[in-house]
Image: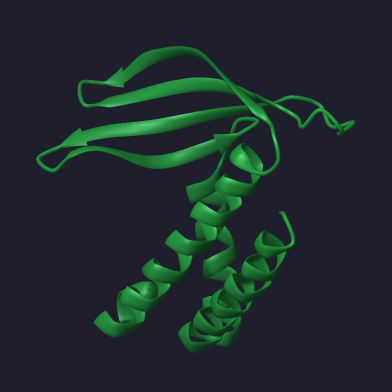
Length: 130
């Protein structure tokens, strides 16, 4: 599990995952023309808020609009997005499940390598216009 990993490994995983999430969101949200409509916000708990939105597809796309909710938490450092839900599916839970399977089957170094490969693929896709 991640609890048995070194600080360096955790740092690498966090950095790679941050890059993957930012790149994916940038492509989905700002790629080549989708529009975001902010629908509402609600308080989930005293310091946690859910901001609901819909992303309209690019004008040249046949895709359906995408519901995206942002879970935002306030702490001493300010507001932070702690999860993004696409059509009610948690990004955090999804990654946690995928990572657990890889770690149990192949180990933490394999997870880091797979994340590096994904970052490379995403950077190529991003340079091609998402």
